[in-house]
Image 1 (cartoon, rainbow, N blue to C red):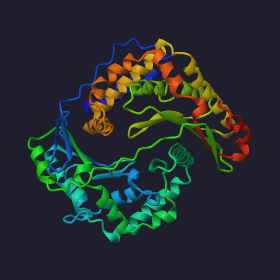
Image 2: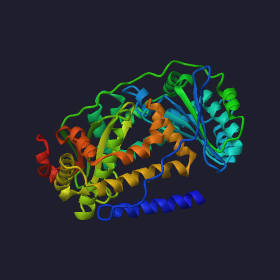
Image 3: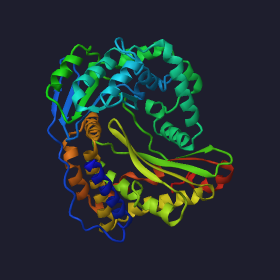
Image 4: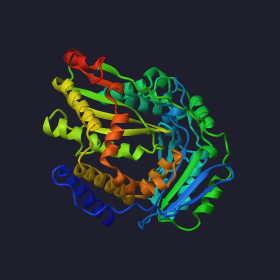
Length: 459
């Protein structure tokens, strides 16, 4: 509770700092660096990687296995098959029914979470520390012996079908789908949604084949973090030692498109236009990645960012614009998103590109940059002190990208060392308006004329 209260106070302080960053640069001392506790890393004879890290004093433990099995492993006709597989894995094992699984984990003070993402399926959760060894055994059972019952396929497909129907009506979902299709043509990264017909065609044999092909010890990394009881290493060896090694996970290299294009998705009568614009940038292993992280926060990725200040605070075009750096294996892309009133669709794009061009031409003032650096450094520390689950997320990020873990220990130091000249240089090199993909979802009849300047010419 004390940690949560402190976190809330710190978060409020950051918001207040950001609100005044441009006029009153914070004079606080440099943020303290993040210290990653010593980890116990080992590999089982079957190739499964394990990382154990003691963290915190609250008697809870986070345990998650990341399996190299996600959307990237789906063929063109199998979109969301990894998600259906994840749902079915919660429906029991050879030794436990779905009800038994849920009840056992609830008795441990947690719940079983199975989620399929772009590149990994994660299996695990957070339980009371006293049940760490028992939870490890349960996760091992789910990973190695899922029943994948045919009786549940139609119900789970219906659940996904309802979710798909909702997603396909959301302008942000439509914009995201088109943006990823353009950036990653003919690659799994670019396949966001299946068709309803495609989804309903999946059979239990398809799920079983997906599981059999992609789930194995060699493609799995198990993370354990929190207040640890002794003997967990032995429990892991007992629970996972007999799992078949399997083949090494396949690699799916991508070559994202970096070229100017404008795409309009018509929604007649829409009161708003949804804007997605961005382009590929260097990935997490690049020496410029942290500079780009700071640049993103200064430009559009924080409440005090320039684009937010411009089109939200000063002009009232939108309520909650944001930018981010999305990552995949060894690559990244910068993306700016905004929902704007229909009649200011063109002006909003004009202001966004004006801010991009301004940071490309002029280094930011020291005071503005310091405010953003303090925000990023503090947020990083905050994220890694609230929950051991957050530490697992950070470790998985650097490990899956093949990065040295010193990235985490040195993050705060490197963020605060970024100079205004580096920000301007990175913007000039990487945020090139003439190479950006622009997607607009809105009333085409009302926004066509506003978008003409962005059809062929670089902004």
